Length: 188
Image (cartoon, rainbow, N blue to C red; front, side):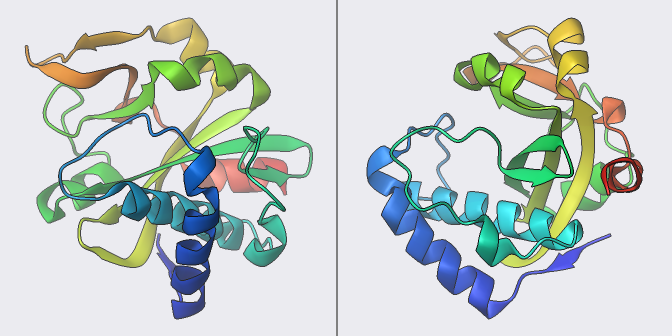
């Protein structure tokens, strides 16, 4: 499953990234994107998630970004936090089809330690991504209930392969993600 990202979405995401820039704290630093480019990826993920659930993404844009949001999207009574990343081509299909090794590179979906206190505001976390360097298609990887995350994961810097994460995070196994179709059926 994939959502086509329109030129309008990209244009508005750039505008909103610029508007939000003074108020956002980035939790992960990456070499392949600037701060503003990471903002754009986040907005595109939120816009695409709205499209997935049949929500007009334009109506989901906040008036201002002075305070932290209480969730990225609301579907019915469910509050969903959307986590969006970019991944290399070799990993994308393996993540989408759950063929990726949880304990290998790109096998975990990360929630930064500074975002953990916010999880109580959300019902679900929807993990998603783009092919690195191609923001034309958004892929929902799957979702988890926030209470499941809080009960089954803890913050660490240690990767299961013996390396370390660049930032302390809750590393959620890709195999723990539930199919987004289940979420769509349960909240709409």
